[in-house]
Amino acid sequence: MPGTVAIRFDVSSSVGSGHLRRAIALGDEFAKRQISHQFVTPSESCATAVALGVPQNQLIGFNTKIGENDWIQQIPELTHVITDFCHHEHFNLCSTIGEILHSKQLNVAVIDSMPPNHFHGDKNTIPSIVVTPYLDADKLRQTPHCRNWLVGVQYAILDSSYLTVRQTLDRNSLIAGDHILVCCGGSDRSQMSEYILSIFLKNKVPEVKLKFVVGNMFEENRVKSIKRIADQYQDKISLVFNQNNIADLIHRCGVLIGLVGLIRYESACLGKPSYLIQNHRNFEQYLRNFHSSGLGNIFFVQDQFERNEFESIVEALGTVDGFAEKSKPNLGAFNQVDGRGGHRFLNVFLDSTFD
Image 1 (tube, rainbow, N blue to C red):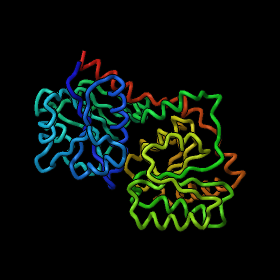
Image 2: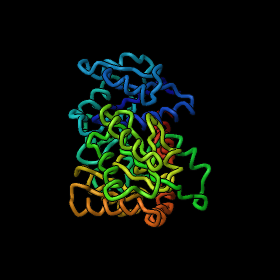
Image 3: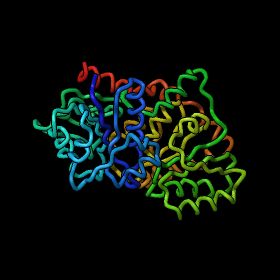
Image 4: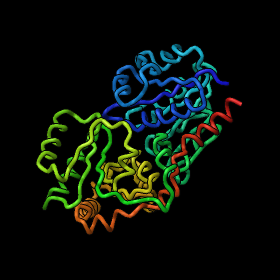
C-alpha cells in the first residue's frame, strides 16, 4: 500500500473552483479505497477551500514564498502527488511540477488543461501520468513529456454525486424538468450571470420559471443587486445560495444556461441540454469541437453574430413553446459522459505506481 497521497490544487475568485471540485472528487475516490490523502493549497486560499467543501482536518496550507517544499516537508509519509493547477495565472507551471518531482522520490500525476495553459515539460520533468480529461485533446496538442498520457472525455473528473444520480437513471428515464437553471460558476468575475438575467427580462417577464445559482465567491454588492431583481419577480425567479454541489439541481432542471466551466460535463453526464457562453478565445478550437460533438452548445459572445444567436435562444427558452422544444434530454451526451472519469484515472495511476 502507498503512504499518503497529496492532492495539490489551486482555488480563488480569479482561478475559479473547478480545480478544487476535481480535488474533492478524487479525495472521495481515495476515501472509498481507504488510501490516506491530504489536500494542499496555498495558505491564502485555505479559507475559500474549506468554505467550498474541503475537509479542514485534511487541508494543508503552505507558504508560496518558500515554495512547494514547504508542504512536502509537512507530510512525512508522502509517496504520491496529484497536481491540479494548470490555469492562466500559474506562470511557472512546469517549474512548479519539476520542483515537486525532484523534491524526493515521488510518483506525480498532472491534471492537464487545454492550450494555452497546458503542461509540456521536458526530459527532466517527466511525471508518471498526465491526464487531459477533455474531448479529443490528443488532436489539438502534442503529446506531453510523461510516462502515460490519459486523454478524452472518459477521464472527465466529476464529483461522486453525479454518479449517484446517474445510477438512478437510464436513457429511457431521463425527463425534462419544468424550469431553467442558470449557473455561471463560483465567482463569475465577468458578470455573465447578470447578462443572462438581463436577456430574460429585456422584453417581458419569462413564462418559464428560472432557478438562479449565486456562486459562493460572488461579491457582496452583486449578490444584493441580484436579490433585488429576484424580489421583483418572486413567482418566476428563485435564488440558490452557497451550493458546493449542484448535481441534484441539474438533474431537476429542464435546461441549463451558464458560463463555460466544469458544468459542461456535469450537465452532459446527467443528459441535460446546455447553452453555455465563453467570453474569451482561450480553448476556442476545443470548445468548438465540444459544440459540434453535440455534448453541449457553446457560444463565443465577443463575436456579435454568436452573441445575437445566444440571446435569441435564451429569449425563446423563456417562452412555454421554446422551452418545450429545447428541453428534451441530451441522450448523446448522457451516453458519452458517465461520471466515472476519476475512477478510471485512479485505476491507472494506482496500478502503474502502487502495484
